[in-house]
Image (cartoon, rainbow, N blue to C red; front, top):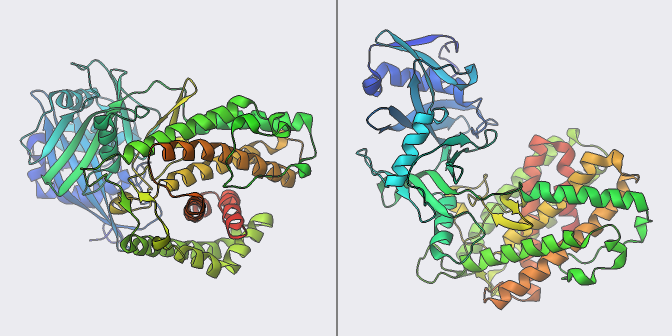
Length: 543
């Protein structure tokens, strides 16, 4: 029965079963109504649900397991969401039965009556009793009686008892809980039948002990059916005291830079960007640029490059664990890369064609250039020739941008190694050129500069064209400062990224890949911002 044909109960309706909570999942009527009536109207409203752009067909309960101690019983649900477009996504929801607590309508999954006892099904993460239980199981390193449900304690966990717990900020694509003000537990909502790369990389970096500027692995919850059939349900890390992420940190500095520019009001047409692949020491940036940019701005970029280089060197050290040993470029990799990117590119071409009515002015001009030169862009993506590349591929961050970096006392901690949300779990684990992460940060620099313009145009006494020109100048120096420090460090520490010609080719290729990827998000979510990836693509194909 599909969601089109079945009758939906109202959220205020009560579901009635002649079962105890401990035996509820043995009731066929409950399982049927859970999948067909209860879960759909609940999950489609959640931030962590990733299927909002697709048509849900039906939900299937793949598995369930008990999470219990002497006092409380909770269930973990593994769901398969099937879509009409013929693909599926899997989700994890821990649930609880409450009978004596008030919850908002949004937090209630369903009202329920079990053997004449009224209550409500809620997401168990809302209950301190659930949070306390799973933290204590992690401390114990407990393995429950249910199949392969494992709670593991990591090297970063030093506490011996539960003290407190609270949610971290607003609901995101995952659910994050702070324990004892020392640890953050990330409960993965969308799950995969494979170890989550965030867990793998975080544990590797912690155990290897070389790269210190990422939160230490402190524990995890996994569902293990066999060595090859593993689902990562949650990852716990040490909580890093911080001042927020690098996106907001650099935005604040950029706004001050543009304000300073506006106050001095030079003729920006006289300013020239340097080459995107140039490398420059902050101490020799021209005085004309330093009039508007404090030295600490470029020092911060230099430090971020240093931490990024350290991360990549650490990820490239392994010589035994095949999941992390560096690899050379190969024909298999080239085939995988081109197939993936051409599919993504054709999707973006179709999206641009269908979105022209949303665009105007410069955005529309750039969109037409993109379509007019699609054969050239496609050729660039297909021109990847592994035989000319001598560098190494390693496990990388994969979704590296300023929002994935925490700031603390003018230093940076790198977090969230899950990889690109649009990629499959297998694709996220493919070893790639470390310069792809560098391209991610460069694109993020570009976004930060243009975001400053878009959000504060009225504060800056320049035409948009002049602001865009200064944006390109400023971005070029940001990238050059970053690239100098990054390349110097990785080459000094024997991580092979090739030499000048190869670095230029790979970085340019990855910048194009990133900009094409971004174009999909912008056209779907905020077409006004599509100018940023379109301009990035234009600059690459015209360089």
